[in-house]
Length: 124
Image 1 (cartoon, rainbow, N blue to C red):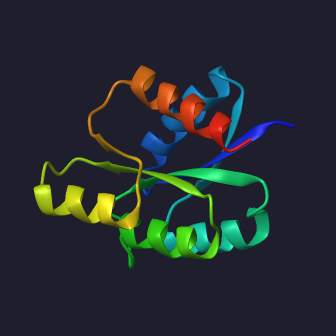
Image 2 (spheres, rainbow, N blue to C red; image 1 turned 90 degrees about the vertical axis):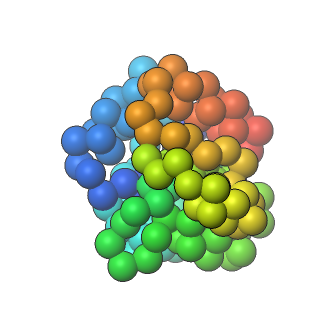
Image 3 (tube, rainbow, N blue to C red; image 1 turned 60 degrees about the vertical axis):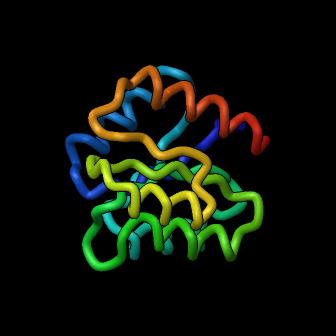
């Protein structure tokens, strides 16, 4: 079975680059451009997706809150927060929500891919 990872990112070009990076390591990306869309995806695919990458700045609900709501419903769901804001408050909120990592943008795709491999394989 192909591994699947949720990417919650409202920048379509950046989301596409993350999707392509995952494709290189045989992980299928499911992209949501908003927290609302992420919740809908997870209602449908909660048994298939156990890892998500969440951008902090999203329309309506921020990525940290989105991750927290999903992880409260789905025990064992792992989240990585992505942000361009080097802010201790944001990093603290992400860790308090249970995020295993905070990726600071711009980050190296190799780092993103390594985290995807590491945490998606832990959820098999």
